[in-house]
Image (cartoon, rainbow, N blue to C red; front, side, top):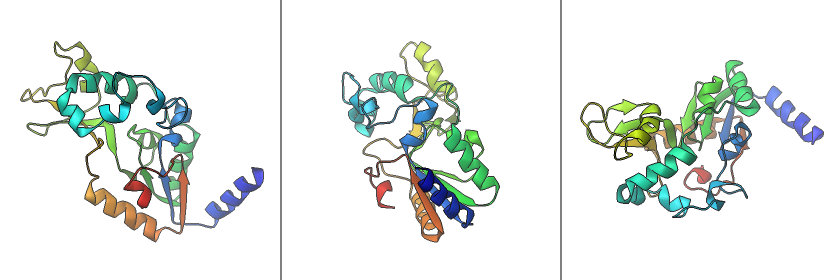
Length: 205
């Protein structure tokens, strides 16, 4: 392992255009469970399979159950960046890392100090009203647990608020795809970490 670390360090030292492509495994050391490991979200017991709950159709079919799961399992509270997040931010500050492309929705790369972060699947820290488009932070979702109907509503128009995350059955933002593919294509070195590379279309990049 030491030899592999040294090899990686040598590659980093000799590169000036690095791109990092990461997934849920990057955040597990911060205490956020991944999806496919033994203790991951997909192996925990719920009334419905997690992949069904976090789908576009389920969001509209059973919004209350969606938010019950979402608040408990996907809304990061009190988590801090780990060594991987901090090192990537440090590499960017030194001018070596050009972009972080992440499948994560926890915002920990930005919290660590990274500036160029392409969040392919959105972020739990952003939420918007389906009626008027007003944006809110994650607190609107947390507070909704105390609402009579347990749902987050816009303070301007009363519309239902939806997390700015890409649910199953929803497509990725084309502009983000273009930026990510361009960054990878132009990279001198691509580092991939914490992802099983089985979720498409991101895995095809």
